[in-house]
Image (cartoon, rainbow, N blue to C red; front, side, top):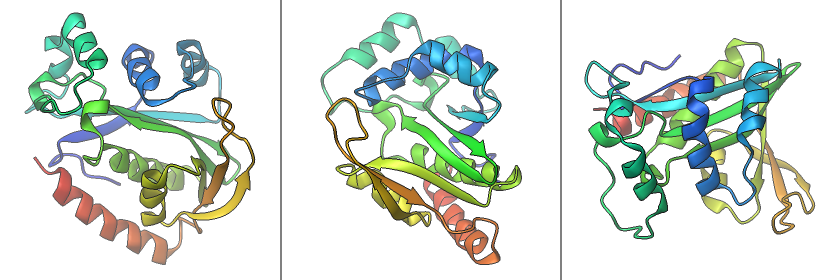
Length: 212
């Protein structure tokens, strides 16, 4: 389990109310984004699905950010082209800064998506979501975790390898937008003492990075 109390962010189950903000990140992060209807289906009808969001923790009221971000300021941040703008303060963040999900199929958890807000990438949110999903997968009966990664996405592959994923296969022309291949990456058994020890070591480092 992850202790979120000292961290800048927390991870919790995605709700229908989160879909609008998830879609804003989805359309920026992916060239072939899912629809809002697809996420609604996943949340309400897919019994294998487990979806989560990362939220900022702002003092004692972690949801305060949502109440002070106006639609116009959110869309201005989403649409701006200047990538060198200083990231928003914790008080100015939307209530969803990242999300991820997996399908539990017998004893295998397949991560279907993971993304962070554009202004907050490479700040540990994706890693926090990944660690939380691995933990949750183990809690509900998974023995291993799998996912697909673009062959060209070396940054994502590096993060996954850090958490024990190794290439176990390749899907030719998997991505419909450009026909790029996908690497199938899988963990060893996530319930073993050795894997859990490595997870704990990684969490200690992640806590230090994300501490408030």
